[in-house]
Image 1 (cartoon, rainbow, N blue to C red):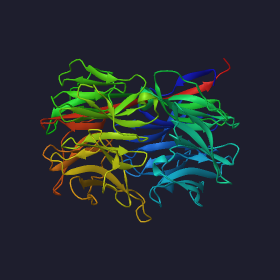
Image 2: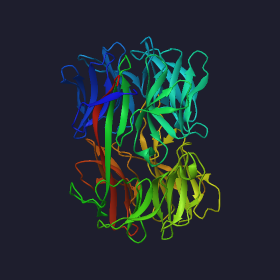
Image 3: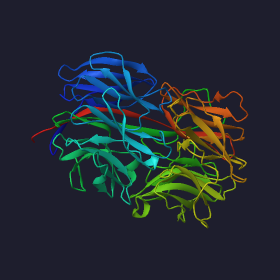
Image 4: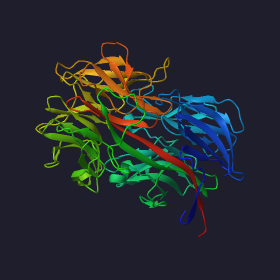
Length: 560
């Protein structure tokens, strides 16, 4: 792909995933429409379209054609919560889909002879481990290749080498590198490294037919890491990634025709903004944005003086709630500032990735004006920090270990696992931490481990007493529609709130702790909620909402 042409296939902005058939004649594409997802088959020679799976609120995660081109394989959520996924198969020219694999946690790869499928499964049956697995084309004869810990290293992407005996999978922060690709020898069970990268993280990747290398989606170290993916080539035996695309778009999903000359992918563009409502919510389906159109925003919180502080990845900025001009507080053009939280009238804390040239994301503290930055943690992936009600502690997720940790805000002590926060037979979702207003509880979301009787996790709100002798948290059932856009106590401390998703649209749900009936407090008719926070005095509610426009493109290798 030193020379190539790009052809846009769809123009609706609603294409979520795509895959190209081995003969390059068909595209299978997931189309979003008002929160429902349908599967469409596009014939490239005739430009005709056929819907093969009708719309439903359950989302898709990965698509593939069988090597002979006769079947469609797709990974689909089991319900509208879009948190647990199965692998299904349907005939190309029509027929009822059949479940092939239940509880799958990666994409799939076919063996070179087309007879087996490889994939990964997490926390099942052993908590804290993931397994590389294979099965036959109808899901039978499941075989475990290896079991590895920690579960947080579960590879989202696998690819079977054309040379048959090796399975490649994505590495996340191996040793002190940022990313890489491992090679698992199926016969010897030994693990080697295909490539490691100090400044790039590989995502979805596919082997070229001759096995001389892989085409890969990747993110580059720095502020683009969390918002943009490009396409590159990694040759066997070379720890170098050669860029193919070099543009301002981002790309999602990657599949190849059997001859390796046509690549199908999805170009994406994401938009976010902040919206301020009364603390009690609003019946309106719309709200006025706070930020200028096109402004990047990732983490945010209220400051003690009633303004908003937010991260645009490179900087922390402050802005009033009436569309004023943002004021820059601090920044680093080589790093990425992600989740952010106010910490009383004196400090703010945030997760700062790559600052100082590292490949880690760590929790930092600054004064409220952005001065005097102090590093508080030294883990691999320390995220989503919040301060205790009294301001003495910073709580955060160590995502590499999948545990809740805490560290003194003053920087006077070492980080430690939050006593009592771990619950047997559950795993954390990383969906935010929320201290109660009076400081008694810390709330977070857990998921139950799969069992033979119930292969799909159930979601629980954990209420951990933060002022007493360590004891297991009290668990309450979350609404089955819960989505991943944050968790917060209400200002009076009598309920927890989180987004629920219906037909692809998020709204905030308030769930009282006394067990009484929950209620919806926002009524948006579009977009997803990425996070939300009540102001310190409890009078206003700020919500970060966003959406992604995406279309299918073909990249064809050309001679010039």
